[in-house]
Image (cartoon, rainbow, N blue to C red):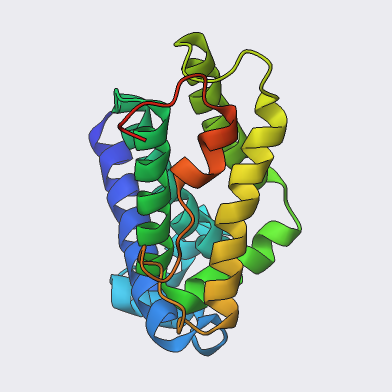
Length: 194
């Protein structure tokens, strides 16, 4: 990466971090592109190099966070229950970190686009396929159906969290849904770890 590319990436990251901070604090409706660029310390035109409209940045904020999770999951070498529990934990942490306002806007943006659903589906189904190849899951498991079941659980938790305006907490005491409960009927062997 050349110096010019590095500077461009730094500028984009400044804009994203400024937007994240402002939207989390004030909500997207109370933040302007001027506010974002002022906090980032860049010219207003710089914003439009990377984003067409204010709402576009929310997608980038959410995608960045979930790319980190995907990278982490791909580097974890453990059984499917532990791996999926870790994915659930990181997913909940990331949604909480993004905050209610960003999550609301992100959810609204994704209703019009299947890219996040496809991204999550690919992440989960790849995890399950690897588990199937390691003989952790029953041979007749429908990977597609199970992937959507897991995604539905995560999306449902996020939606309820947003609808409760953050009153519902994502810790395990309040939300007792985990990988073990979801995977138990599909596991090839039940051992003491589960």
